[in-house]
Amino acid sequence: QARTATKCFSSPEGDHITLINVYRASNDFLEKRSMEMNMAKTEKVYRKWCKENFINSRSLRHARDIHR
Picture 1 (cartoon, rainbow, N blue to C red):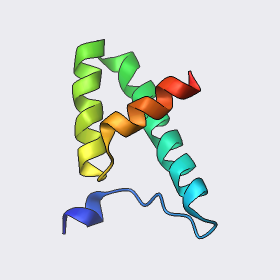
Picture 2 (picture 1 turned 90 degrees about the horizontal axis):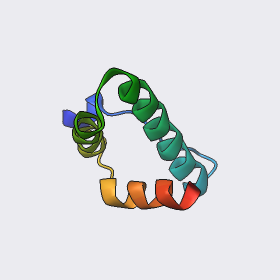
Picture 3 (picture 1 turned 120 degrees about the vertical axis):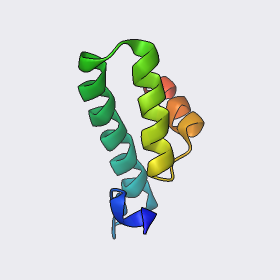
C-alpha cells in the first residue's frame, strides 16, 4: 500500500533512463523546496522524500555531487 504513494521512475528503455528519471525528480523536488525552506529543513525533507520513494539518499547525494 505504501508503494502506491511513490512516484514511478522506471523506464522500459532501461536502467540508465530510470536512474536519470530519479535524478531529475530529485532535482525538481529540491529546487521547489529550497525556495520555501532553509537548508537544514530542506535536507530533512529530502531524506524523507528519498525514503518514501525507496531511494538511497546517500547514493543520490553522491551522484549530485559528481554532477556538480
